[in-house]
Amino acid sequence: MPAHPSGVLHAGPSPVWLPVPTDVNELMASLWSRNTVKNSEGVLEVAGVPVTQLAERFGSPLYVLDVDDFRHRAHSFVEEFSAAFAAQGMEARAYYAGKAFLCTAVARWAHEEGMGVDTCSLGEMRTAQAAGVPAQAVGLHGNNKSDDEIAMALDWGIGRIVIDSLDEIERVSRAAAARGITAPVMLRLTVGVEAHTHSFIATAHEDQKFGLSISGGAADQAARAVIADPHLEFVGLHSHIGSQIFEKDGFALAARKIIEFSARLREDTGFVVPEIDLGGGFGIRYTSQDKPVSFAQMAGLLAAAVAEECDDADFPRPAVSFEPGRAIVGQAVFSLYTAGTIKEVETGSGIRTYVSVDGGMSDNIRTALYDADYSCTLASRSSDAKATVVRVVGKHCESGDIVVRDEYLPADISRGDLIAVPGTGAYCRPLSSNYNHVPRPGVVAVEDGQAEWVVLPETYEQMFASDPGFARANENGEK
Image 1: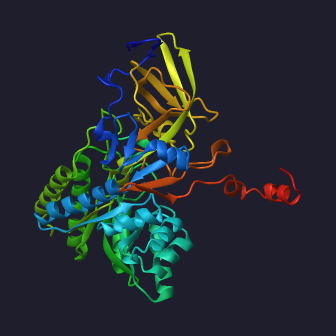
Image 2: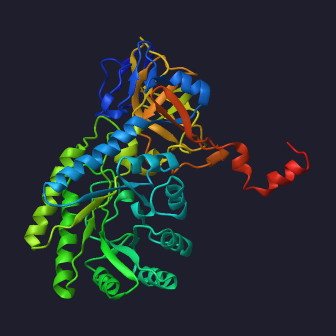
Image 3: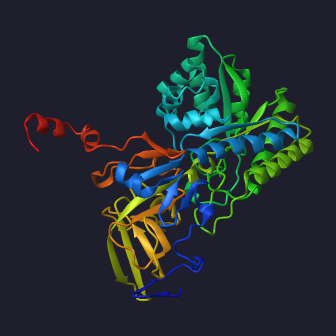
């Protein structure tokens, strides 16, 4: 791995894939939201608002959400998939995957752009409900649903409960019978597909916690039980092969396995599965190495694949639903940090420059958890300095507290500069923590030159409210 000379600083070991920028001040537009640019002074702007103003008004670290970008992606997904599947004689449905990032504003925007909301907890259901999303447009997932979650789903009149185990069939049936209603349910199947992604986010291979195995017989047993149960309405079959996926092949193979299963079920019982859900997991671009397929391309490929599988199995074409989350919100958000300590470290093969910021693994755990790669840019000014490879790290007491493993920044990066990291809309705020007793950042939504909180930053008072010792200390007048 080469060392890159950079004026008074020298780059440490850098990955061979990292492109050397011709201008370190320029943005790679494909990594950012559609309304994010740099102005003539080199200051990053989103929807007409400079990040210097955002930092002054809202502080840092900060998640910055481009509202128009989120709406555009949601609308485009619905439009492209609806058109592609309609051309094959099928209806396409889309549910925004709330686990990626959910607040009432996001749930409302997703629904206004034609999407339902996919939830997997009581808190996510309550968020969708508070946002005014109709119950029929909401689904509930989860491999270990609580009695309270099942009760809320039934009492609210949720559109579908995705059953994940054999014992859950009896639990949902019993709860529905007690209410004198019929519960709409899907069955989540383990289809035995190895998605090309990180092992922690591959969810359709056999040895993992989700779903009912087709090959092991649990799926067949579950389907027959649901068909025979008067308190359950069998509305479809579900699969999810993983996340951050760029190829259609895994989805097509999952569709084949579900349709083959559906055809056998029809032959054995006469029941025709009306809907299949192929999940989400469509990848986005975090660095120059990621090559996502456009919504239009993916929609066309998948619609043709499902139609072909149905024809091969002589099975009527069902409605097909999807659950994109990352693909909708991921690039609509960037994280804004303030640089602190700058440190040069001799690595044995060159000098690595460490740039510490005022956040870290408490607001973005994905680098440590999934070995994820990110990009970044100097956001508060332009620079004439040469480009040098840096490692952007957090303030936490962990050597693995890395935000951006390798990226080129100007060699004169210094304390007080603003650094922006694109593509942090998915799984960063939801996975955030109070590690080292650091409050979680808020989320600012920017649209048409205006900025406002959609998630308030956590205060120390809120963070300490769960510790009775602080209450006692306050009562005693201690600081």
